[in-house]
Image (cartoon, rainbow, N blue to C red; front, side, top):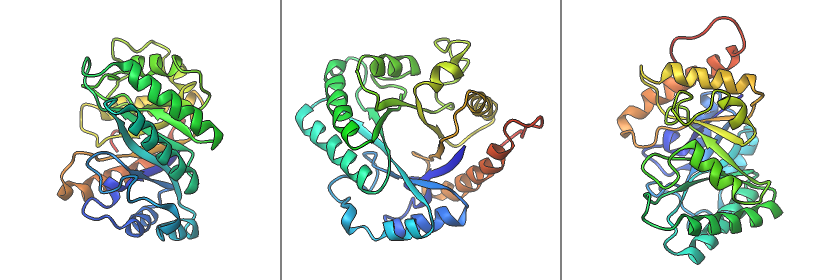
Length: 260
């Protein structure tokens, strides 16, 4: 597995993408994801690939810009959101990324899920032409709030370029809706693992998920994210995530780390 971090984690107090590249390299990461959540300073209106000097630095350091992370769909203006998603796919393709991570930013019952399905299906069809994948990331308190509901959405759309972004800190393998063979089930959909800052309650579950998914054959990116944490906690979060690199290298061996 390869380790990456979001720009929200790398540069919480800045919008300098060159600085994000340098911080990722200093910590020995393999990639970084440009966060385009509603709270992020980056959005499709100010991201123009041909004018972004950070790409030159990333390529020089062989750092993957591997994802646009946290693009949020609300289903309130379908045509505008279809255009927004296509712009994200085009940007992703232009910077050499093969993934746009999507969230459904509506609460259950707030907007028809069929509208979201229409937007995602349109985007997936467009993304396929550029060999970019769309990853559905289930989030609590949204219309797609579980792995099961994310898989239902993915299965309802006929696309080979649509999959799952999974955060084991939010959706435990021991959740009542997760089957015993969850790792095998998720693996066939899985595009990326996301890890939020750990605490004593979810470290063990996160390590269990990483081990299961590794054994199931997942060898792609684990993305470290510290969204929602205050800036003064970010340095601590970065150091915590840096320890994951050693853990990921040790997966499959008999010994187990007890914390990140």
